[in-house]
Length: 446
Image (tube, rainbow, N blue to C red):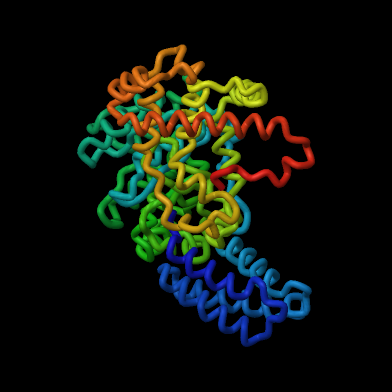
């Protein structure tokens, strides 16, 4: 995740003050010195850092905090609230036009991931909001930009409107809206041209498209890894076009995350979405409070639940629960579960959304090898139907065949069989346990 360094520094600082029975002004001053350094190192705009530290300090040395029963906790609460406010306070929702289609102009410099983000946003609108978007290829200058959008459209089964690269972008945008009305699309996402840097021609063309289409949203796509430059780009585009939102890409990269913390304050433009990976479903609505929780190591259970709701089949989940209760869980069920969990994204990212995960030893360096999951799947797929349903029939001869068929070792097959048996025993133990005792029940490997 972005903010990795910032999160570590802030969590370390918070930890020092968390359990203090008494907190005085000197403690707050010392903590705020650390916070200021952490934010500046994360490439947060200097003025933004100065204002943030001033606001937190004023609130943290107030009577209600220092004289409370848990002053350390109260100071952390103040930091979280101000961090949330810094990133925009509440989630800024996407516009919905009263007279469809809702028009969204996607703008930005070349290389920020604008075309890919346009496809991801269309995918999210359909999956999460049940909309019927249409993509518009209005970048006629960059070689293969139209082809790229058409390829993405095929990948996510989404219509792409194009008139080739010999028609002006303004005309393409105009005709796309007429086509969207004819075909009853409720969202139109216009992928406009980018340049390597901001220039007059680019801005004039974007203004013409804006004047003609009267978009409900103008989203600037910026690469979070460019740090302070991202803020400068946002400022320029905002002055010329009047942005309604920012989409930050590559927020999962090895970036210091300062852009996400500065953009809102400097441009007064909300961050609407963040790209958290390369896959077409790796785009999330931006929730300032949830991001503040993640940065301070408090987890992000709500996003985890949303990911599960979008990717896990409810009927199958109920059926699985029944099988767990009756201990009739098979290797096929296990395979099904692996598939559903993998759809939610990288497992190490999912685990880090759990509250307190940052305190688990070794969690900060956790990297779950997705290949290992592939190995497990290969072993299970090499079993016969009988073996999947009744693993007890797997003798040494069958183990050899399974190992050979999956390209894994006999030791790996043995390990998987033992883990599966232990898991079934644990399920049985859990389902037979009286309700009151389930509360404190710990998984054997936790």
